Length: 218
Image (cartoon, rainbow, N blue to C red; front, side):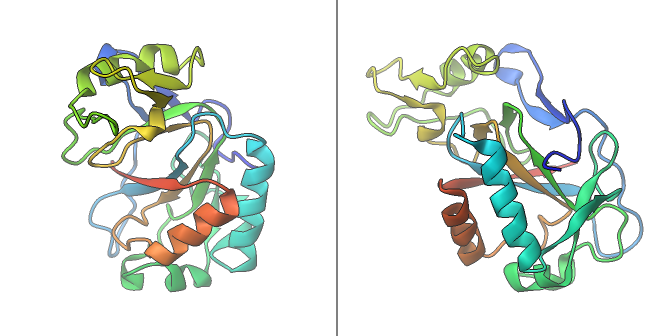
């Protein structure tokens, strides 16, 4: 079981440059404890169409389970429709900067894996800005407008309107990080704990692609 949230757990919301990807269900308050605000840290490969994404998702999940970072079977500890996710496990303490901020004992705490084409943008300090890695010019308005053709899969690429440089849309510059892909790993209420750089690097190596981290505060 790779996508415990079920089909359509995330979607791109149309509206020109305002397209984003969030849960269809509202982010719920996690309950009492150390979590100040419900959040997600989303690890996304920096490629629009991941070859063999279901198999890669299973490979990463097996690795996370073997390291006791998440549990092997999904339970109702997620935030998407149906609420199914892979619950946090003891090994998660070894892969974050602040283990005391992990959501142990909270009803929402698990990993959800999304295998549909989606747009991931942060909720903090997000001004829809983007840069071209070739000419270094600001192209955010045009790029985010182009997501209306990216989302239905008409193209994976974007062409810089200033210099003509073309690449997968993930190859452009985003501060803070954004990502666009048909595969993502959503860690519910892990953002305050902060994933270690070494863990994200190993995650990317297992997945086979460099990864972005996108933070969403619900």
